[in-house]
Image (cartoon, rainbow, N blue to C red; front, side):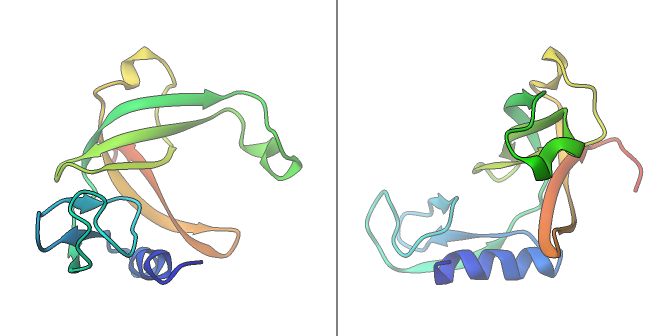
Length: 128
């Protein structure tokens, strides 16, 4: 794992969503990396984001492609446009899977998967 990825997952382990942002052109980097893909600057900083967003796209897996995923189907993988702008991908829990997912307000929720820090998205109106 690259150092930038490690830092991202350290923030997730602390239940805190941070992404890199270029100090030169202000582009958000998701996924993280060593250089801004727009201006090629290496002047990057980690900045907090809310974890709130809107489902931009999704796919529902109704068949598992690995034995360890059998118990999880069906599950939705969503692409979320965060309130700050960058797109993040994650699982969606606590929602019916269908066309109404597009545009659904969501928030990030933290946990662990296979003893590793993890995040997922839940409908924004869902109680803790």
